[in-house]
Image 1 (cartoon, helix red, strand yellow):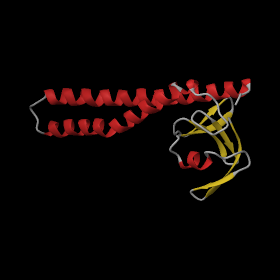
Image 2 (spheres, rainbow, N blue to C red; image 1 turned 120 degrees about the vertical axis):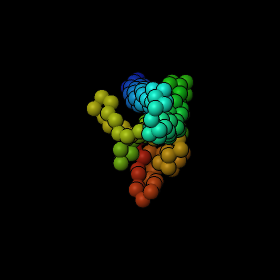
Image 3 (tube, rainbow, N blue to C red; image 1 turned 135 degrees about the vertical axis):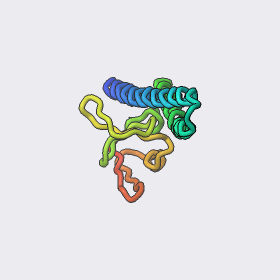
Amino acid sequence: MQLTESQQTEKEAVAAQLLAIKENSYQNMMAMQNADMNEAESTNDNVQNMFEDGKVDQSINRVEARASVVEALQHDIRVLANLSEIEPTEEIQLGDIIETDQGTFFVGAASDEFEVNGKKYRGISTDSPLYLALRGKHNGDKVEVNGTSFTLKNSY
């Protein structure tokens, strides 16, 4: 499948925007992780107060609770950074833009709605129910996901 120049440019811009969103989230998460670790270390140095042990535990618990989010963000960043290596095909796949009657989606990583060049997109992963339902479908096909009907208008 050969993409038009505008389709290729759109895909690259959407992927770059979603990558920037994920990288920003990762940087914010790491800043919080570092702040909590620094707080735990500085509090741990103050051995005069038993109350401080609870504060250290809270800081460490927050770091541990965020660990899976950090790992997920790292995974999303790796996926998005390597999308340019995927050759377009007739089948809906990773890196595709999917236009439906319910909105426009980008297959790469789950995300809230974001905008590129005045057009709104929502990121979905290859594990999302919408992606799984649309895989192998063609323009005009309809699928139902969680009680919502989607009509595939275009994908590239």
